[in-house]
Image (cartoon, rainbow, N blue to C red; front, side):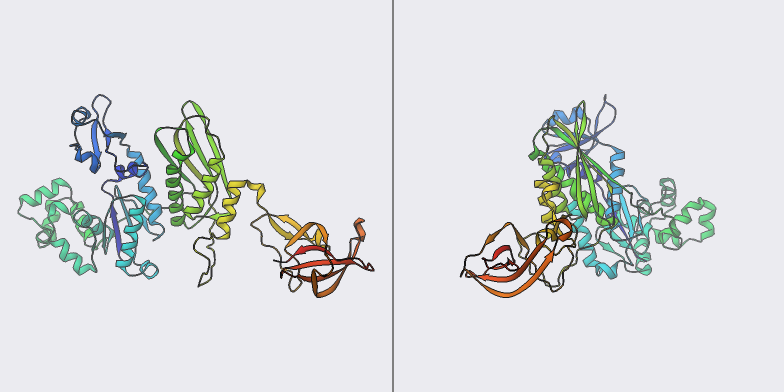
Length: 471
C-alpha cells in the first residue's frame, strides 16, 4: 500500500486568509488572556513589518499598527481539518485526521483512476492551492513513515519498503517521532541515527526503554500497522464566515458567498453527492438572522451554478440591517448523477447548459416564472399542452407532427400567402365537455419559408386559420 501525508503548517492562518477579500493585508492571529495577548501566527506581509510569532501585542503595536488581528481558535483549526478530510475523501475511502493539522489517505487503489503519481500529485497540489491552503506533501509505504518524512521533506515519494528503510536509517533519532526523553537518552548513548539504533539487539533496547519505543520503530518501518480511525463525511454542511466589518450592500457579500459555495462544492464532490436545498444566513447584531432559502429542481454541485443561483436569490433580498456574519447550511444532500454529454460537444463556448440556464432564470425571475411543457390526453391542440415542472421531460409523440408554438387566438391565412405541404389530418373531439371541434389540419409553408399548422372547419369553404408555428 502507499499512503499520502499532507501537512498544513499554517492551517489556522490560511483558514482566516482565505475568507478575506485581500489576503495580502498584514494579519496576525492572537492567543492568550486579554491581559497579555501574544502573536500566534503572522502572514508574510506582517513579517515584513517586523512582526514575529511569540511577540506580545504591545511589542507588535510598537513596531506598527497597520495590521489586522483575528483570534486563534483551536476548534476552528479542527473544523478546517475536517473540511480538508472531506476534500480528500473524493480521492480515497481511507482518510484519517490522526495527526494534528494533517490529512492522511491511502492512494494505492486510486492511482488507476487518477493516473500515475506525478499526475496525481500535481492535481492534489493544484486543488489545495485553489482552496487557499499551503501544504507539504509526501508519499510513503505506510502512514506513520509518511507523516514523519513530511516534517523534513516536500514532494518526496518513496517507492517501496527497501527505499524507505534506507531513508529512515539516515534520519536523526530526534526527528523520527520518539518521545523527547527516549530520543535524548539514545542521543546521549551515542546513537545519532535510526540505523544505529536498529543495529542494537532488540533485547537490549527492550530492557532499557519502554515498550512504546520498539512499537514506534516497528510501526515506522511498516512491521506493525498503525491503528487509524477513518473519516466519515457528515450528513450536513455548515460553514460560517465572520465579516471584518458591517456590510449593508449585496456587492460586499459576493466574495464570502463565492467562497462558501465553492467550499460547498468541494464538500459535495468529496462526499459524491449533490445539493438540492440550502440556506443562507445573514447574521445581524442584536437581531434574528435573515434566512434566504435556495432550492434547485435537481441535485447539483457545480460551484459556478451554486454561486449564480445563490447570488440571484441574495440580490432579491433587501438587506435591512448590517451583516456581521455569513453562514451557509445544507442538509438536503441527495445522490448526484452526472450529466451525460456527447463525446464531441459542439456547444458554443459562451452558451450555458440547459440546467444552469434554468436555475439562473429561476433565481432571477422567480420559481413560478419558469415552467416546462407537457402533454395530456386530448387531440385538440389548444387542450393538448399543459404547464409542468421545468425539470420534467416531456413525453414523445412519435411520428406525429405538432407545432411547438401555439397562438393565443388563430389567425386567418391570406389566400396566396402560403402553400399546403401536407394534409388534411382530421381531428374530431371534445363532444364530452361541450367544446366539440371538427377540423381538417394542414402543414403549410409561407413565402418566407416558415412552416405552420392551419385548419379549416369540416365542410367550410372559408380561409385557413393558422393555429401554430413549427420551430
